[in-house]
Image (cartoon, rainbow, N blue to C red; front, side):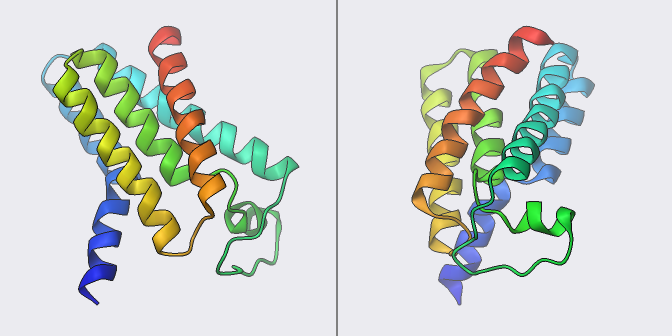
Length: 146
């Protein structure tokens, strides 16, 4: 029971609420560019994931049922949106703060999210690896287009 709660907490590091809090905080402390980059990265992560899942369906390890196209996109495990969001957040924050210690901390958090998705049987290892790679690319792109 405790182990499941820990994995859920780690997974939460890539959730939309974390993004919203960091975006609002960035905006309030005068880091509007960072807030815009984070928002752009979040939107791009969803766009990339939906496009890939629309074209390529891979059933989740827990075999999530679906009845329509929206549910089918959600039921697809490839790529991991959680891992991608975590990598986007880690990449953008690492580029913004340019601090080696923070970069390691952000990277470890993103990897923790990826591992939690495999441990909770929501994704296969390949799903989270591709999610992390795409997240770094999306995060990097978001810093240059915003």
